[in-house]
Length: 104
Image 1 (cartoon, one colour):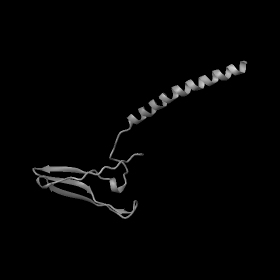
Image 2 (cartoon, rainbow, N blue to C red):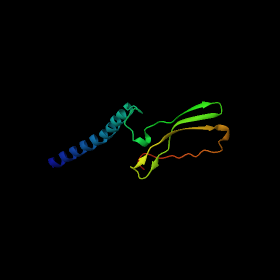
Image 3 (cartoon, rainbow, N blue to C red):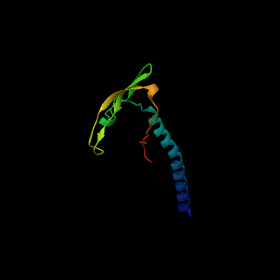
Image 4 (cartoon, helix red, strand yellow):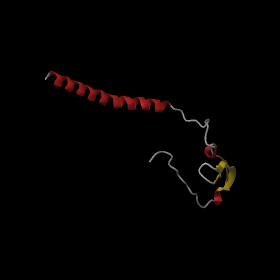
């Protein structure tokens, strides 16, 4: 009978440590995640290495680093970065494409 009581005590200790360990682990991961600093000064793939930016001059907008890649396969492509100028008064519509980069 004494052995049975020890098993129960050990089992309840294990359940309590597992229950307290999960929030602790999540907290540690969250603290680590919040210390990460985003940076564009990293080694990026060539097809996403540039950041687009724009200048306005009255009705004209000049967009720099517009990506125009020629993809033959996912790994085989020619990267081109262009500068384009548009007149806002002549814009009749804008297409927006969004790509989800994370896991589903």
